[in-house]
Amino acid sequence: MQEQIIHMVKISSIKVVIPRSRNKFRHAEITESIDASGLRKPITIRRIVDKKYDFALICGQGRLESLTALGEELIPAFILDIDENQAYIMSLVENMARVIPRAGEQFQRIKEMADQGLTNKEISNATDYLCIGLQV
Image (cartoon, rainbow, N blue to C red; front, side):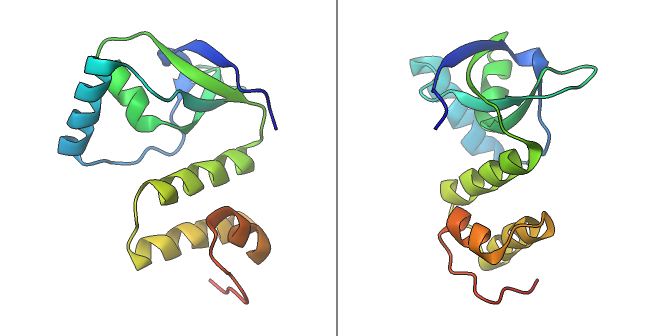
């Protein structure tokens, strides 16, 4: 397990690799909550080699967008030393845990994991779903 040190990182140095759309009303509530009581959970990022960015977002796009909307330049972040595939899996797992997706959305996320080359066992471990003989 990597040490959990919180770093203050420039928001402008973070690349959102796989942006997702969100409910504007719900996101406004999150932004208001952060404005009123502060950010409760740092985002998670990883170092990358890129001409414009130093980091890639793993988890926390909504928090990142909220702090940007509030005019902040820095954001608290955990920096993990993991590769792109590990980061992608972490992002998918967090998205699956946050909401109860419809069956079609669950299947699509699991298919994305399989397309990334994960075995049925790895997908099962990441999602807590039993994936036996999974063919997508």
